Length: 404
Ligand SMILES: Cc1ncc(COP(=O)(O)O)c(C=O)c1O
Ligand SMILES: N[C@@H](CCCC[NH3+])C(=O)O
Image (cartoon, rainbow, N blue to C red; front, side, top):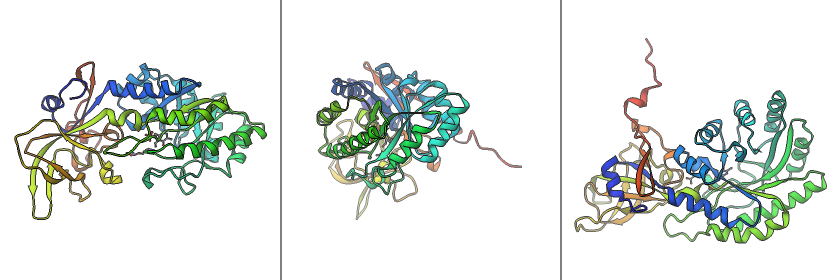
């Protein structure tokens, strides 16, 4: 069940594979952040990349959330969903002049700048619009986020941010450019961090930089600690949003700056499941394969990061023997698996829920093997609402053209 609605009924009525999200759980996680940091001036900017469905963004906008975006596409989505441009921070390594212009025209809160070249680009666009662009530098505190290497971003060998050593010089350039206004400092050290210590280490480094900048005559209005707090997928020990706040607040309070946070996963991951149907059971001498109707094109996290996500049957089936199964998709790739070595009692047509799928699920899906992308449902106030129709096969080639 999700908030009183049967997931088996959703699968029956809307088909599978289908993503289902709980409005209540999304808002509860947002509120946990908002309440936990109530003692200081703060803005929670939900990281749109985690789940960018318009209905999800709209629910968060109505609750007062700001948004962390990384492209002009995400900016357009937030505006289409009714988000307040004044609560938007714009992160990302490769903001185009066009994206920067659109963001300046609607008056976003801040650009999180990742290179010296980007500063000149923003300054030039802002100059043409006769504006001063609000900016932060994304500094790289060189701390080990202790997470998967593909989603660790705060080490000096990562492509993100500006190094600790370079930051004073680049801040000075920003301070001196006529169409920029330095308003903050930003860092984001990685994703799926289960403990608070790496955030504390990063905060210490950022605080040192804030003091050094003050000596340079550069005063800031806000500190942005990015996103990255993890969630429990199986049985990991993960700090709660409340613990995260309790540990960070004492240091933050001494700064007297507005706090920005950019959580993505910790707001939506455990608010969502991916429903899939057992299509073919293929026990073999070496392994038992359950071929399901979702695949790596629907949910790429297991293939890309070897991430483990829990699989729960949605109904009690006829007593069949539990066995160890690999849950795989029907795509022509050996890497196409959703879960490995799970003890499950499976029968044909059983509906399974992959949990933790509200973040980096649908947004990372593709049409590989010409598979239409899944439908998305929002459970709100006891009803299941379709918030994205399942794609049709014909829609897959709508932008393609034959050549004579
Ligand atoms: C700059 C930035 N902010 C926020 C996030 C959101 O991270 P998470 O979903 O781990 O909270 C990311 C993704 O890691 C990011 O790159
Ligand atoms: N997509 C990743 C997280 C990357 C976060 C984006 N900076 C995941 O599913 O875990």
